[in-house]
Image 1 (cartoon, rainbow, N blue to C red):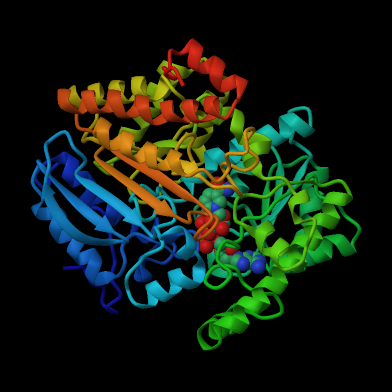
Image 2 (image 1 turned 180 degrees about the vertical axis):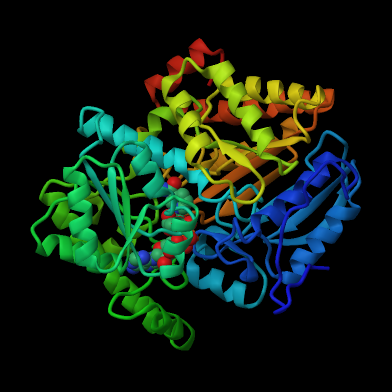
Length: 555
Ligand code: NAD
C-alpha cells in the first residue's frame, strides 16, 4: 500500500538505514530507488508519478507501482522481475548472478514508433514514457545533469572564449528537472546566466535548492540585471517567469547579443512538455485538456518563433547550440529550413569524452546518510585527484549541491576508472566505512548506450547515427555481466521514435559476489562506448582502445 497524506495525494520516500525489507541488498536497492525517484524532493510531479523530462514516469500508474513494490518485497535472490512499460508482468527463476529486474519502457516497432501511436497506447493504459532515468529508477534530481551541463559550458568556454567564462552571459530557457541544472552549472563554470521558464513553481524550486540566485520581476528587469552582472564579471544566475520567445524577442529587440545561447524547455513533447506563447500557464493547461490538436498547433508555432529568434541571435554572433530537446526538429518540420544551422551539443562538445568511455556515471547512498557520499567524495579525490577538472567538480559539488532524496553523486568517470572506483567503494562497504551499500548507475546518455540521431549520435563520422544495434548490445552485455537491473527505453530526451537507449544499475553491497559483478559491469558498460566510437572511425576511440586494451575483435 502507498503511504497517503492527509489530502490523499500519495507521498513517497525511500526507506533509509541498515535494516532491510527485501530478501537482500540487491533487491532492497530497487525497492529504495523506485521510491526515491518519486520522492517529492526528487520528482517534478510525484502525484502523477512523473519524475522529470516532460512526462517521464517511474511506473505506469499507481496500481502498477503498488504491484512493482509488492513484487520487489517478495522477490527471491535467484529471481528476475520483468517490467514492461512501468508495470510488473512476471517473475522468473534465473540465478543469483543475473539481474534482479529487466525493464523495457515505451519501445514500439519502427513504423509505429511515433507520438500518435504512443499516445493511443498510453490512453489504453498499455505503455509508459520512461525518459532515461525515470523509468529505470536512477534519477538523482537536477544534480544528475549538473556535471554534464558544467562540462558542456566549460568545453564551450575552452573552444570559444579561451577557457574563460567570467564576464560571459549564457541565455537559455527551461528550469525544469534537467534544465534546472543550467544556472548552477553555468555559474560553477564562471559565467553569468539568464533563463526564462513559464512556470513560477519550477523557478521557485531552483531558488529553494540554491541552483538559481535571483528571480527577476519582469523580462526587462531580468535582462538589465543579467547584462549588469555580466559587465561586473559576476557568476550569478537570474530567472524570469516568461515564455522563451518573450525573453529572446526582448533581447533581439534591444539589439543585445548573449555570448552563449541554448534551450532546455521540454520541446521533445509538444503536447505535455512545451508551452505555447501568448497564454499563461493555466490557459495552456486548460487548452491541453480541451483541444490537444489546437495545443500542439500553437506549440509548434511557438517553436518556430523560438528557433527563429535563436537563429537571429546566432547570426549576430551568439555561440548557439541545441541542448538535446528536439526543438530544432520541431521547428524544421514546421518550416524553419535553417534550424539545423544550430549545432547539437554532443558533436560540438561531448563526443571526445564518449571516445574515452566517459559519461554521466553516478552513485547513490542507500543508507540515506550524507556522510557516505562525503566519504566517496574523498575517495574520488584520493584516486583521481590529479585530474584537475574532476577535482574541481567534486570540490564545487560538495559545497554547492543540495541533495535531493537519497544522497548521491554524479561524476563523469571513464573506461578503467569506473570499475576501479566501484571496487574501492565495495571495499569501503565491506569494511563498514560506509553505513550501507551504494548503487552505481548512469544516465542512458552515455558513450555506448544510445542511438539518437538528433542528440548523442548526431553527425557520427561514418553516418551511423540511426543504427540502434548499439543500445541493444549494451543492454545484453550488461545482463551478461550481471548488472542488478537493466533497462531499454524509447524516446528519452528527444521523443518517441527519435532514440533508443539502455541503462544499468549495479549494487555494491560489500560482498565478493558484488565485487565480481562490479568489475565486469563497470568495465564492459563504458567499454562498448569505446567500441562504438572506434567502429564509427574516431581516431581518439581507436587509440584509447589500444592504450587501455579494449579488445575490438578482428572485425
Ligand atoms: P521538464 O519538463 O522537467 O522541464 C521543462 C521546463 O520547460 C518546465 O519547467 C516548463 O515550464 C518549461 N517550458 C516549457 N515550454 C516552455 C516555453 N515555451 N518557454 C519557457 N519555458 C517553457 O524537463 P527537463 O527534465 O528539464 O528537460 C528539458 C528538456 O531537455 C527535455 O526536452 C529533455 O528531454 C531534454 N533533456 C536534455 C538532456 C541533456 O543532456 N541535454 C538531458 C535530459 C533531458
